[in-house]
Amino acid sequence: MGNRIGTTTNMLASVMLLMLLSACGGAGNGGSGGTDGKGEGAAPNTPKPAESWADKPAELVFHNLSGGPEEQFNQMFGNLIRQKFPNYTIKFIQSKPGTTLPELVALKERVDIVYNSIEYIAEPLLGTGLEYDMTELIKKHNVDLNRFEPTIIDGIRAIGSGKMYMLPILNGRQVLFYNKGVFDKLGVPYPKNGMTWDEAFELSKKLTRTEGGINYLGLSASPAHILRTNQLSKPYLDPKTLKPTFLDEEWKKLLQAYFLSYGQNESFANRTAELKRLPYYTEMTNTYELAMFVFNSTFPWDGPAYVKNIDWDLVSMPTFKDKPKVGSQASPGSFAITSVAKEKDAAMEVIKYLTSDEMQTEFSKKGIMSVLKSDAVKKVFGTASEHKDKNWSALYYDDFAPLSYKSVYELGIEGIYRPLIPDIATGKADLNTGLRNIQELVEKYIAEQQKK
Image: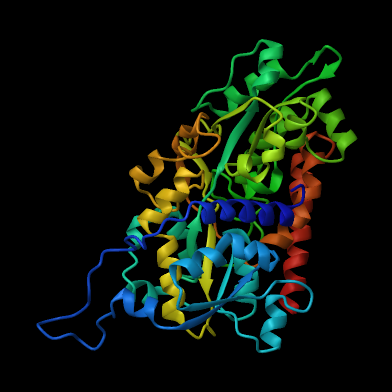
């Protein structure tokens, strides 16, 4: 989970496995249930009843862009879909050398549905020309987009310049996890929901000290996760020009808040130098030296082997004083029907099923953050999970920041700035100089990619 690809893959695998375990029997209500028929007779464009698509035999080929094997796919999706849609033949092609999405396109192999987190689905989908505007299918199958968290739908539309190239299935956000044992050892009160970044820094100072031969550290964060979902909704690239934005003032504010304020402490800087990276969740869960870590809300299920070793809890991500009640952006996992899908109606029925109120409620109970805005779904979060006693109010304490524009270059850009953040955070590199360096490297990368 230490690298960006592995973290995304493992997160989706573990969370989707919970989706399988929490599957319920009914299809649920995917939308409004209305029709487009006018007058007494059915108009030619009147949608068929959903049952007709579910009853009709269909073959669907899935492709996990993160590269998981077929066994993982069956645990995550395949068995669940086969149970609900026994007339569907469900196939899977693993993404690996020789069968990546671009290679499948070159081989003219059909793929009906691809899936990944929203940050990493745009590059392979749009880059291979398989994008398909699902807007009409969404209407045809009565999927009410007003049920969804609006920032997610707005973000998906931004990726597609108004078109709906995907629909979200699960959600996540950044929160602040903490090791109670460190707080207890140092006699410091636990953090609370609603802290500002200034308050988090002050708390961090009390926790960054040597006690019993251990150099305790107060706070850290995962650079790619916190920056891609930043609270100012700042994109890596300007959506109109595709020029990097790292010289804009917002990036200075973000890096100052997320890293520099605590990163230049001598103990933190020395530990970062030893690790050759910023302190990560392992320093909270394995070596017990880190008190607080900002990370994915899915972490307790993504890394159960780690959290079982500590007495932990969570609170909402700290906020900026001038942006109260604005938390991180959402980080949804999404399904996209491709342009070459043979049975688009069947594919849409699968997506409709997974986003139904009933299914999303069951997911929420098991600790899978819903993509819906329903208060009823949110209230049952984690109630059927092994972590039901934790402070899950943290997930919905603040609003979601608007989803920033996600380009086809997200993964490459993160690969550029990620190794440069530790030196900026600890003061080894000047903030302005560091951002100029990132800007120049990203400009060069984009230019190279555009020549291909």
